[in-house]
Amino acid sequence: QVQLVDSGGGLVQPGGSLRLSCAGSGSFFSINARGWYRQTPGKRRELVACISSGDFATYADPVKGRFTISRDNAKNMVYLQMNSLKPEDTAVYYCFATYRTSCYYTDFWGQGTQVTVSS
Image 1: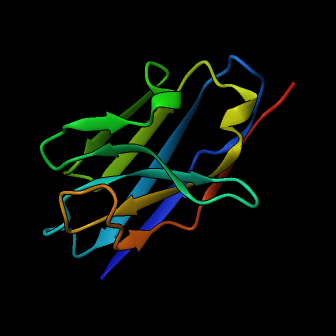
Image 2: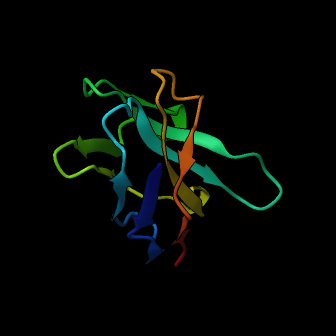
């Protein structure tokens, strides 16, 4: 089994930055893609960023150029650096991991971390 714990959320002003972390434990040797989704009340969870085991990264259009995803396979960690944050980035962010190469198959989830962008 795989366990994920995400952290790093908080309250930040527009234009500010946050760095989310996702710590993984358990049987990680077969994990392929990892990344982050986010969700706001009443809306579906949406993919934000994804990184493959080979460090190929993809991003949702609203965050391109502002967010950067990275991973440290030796530590089973994934990070999401979020810069130039906007109020519309406010959401609960969930890290995920999957055995597959596609970011749209999610086998494991973190518990979520709240990001609030407000002045």
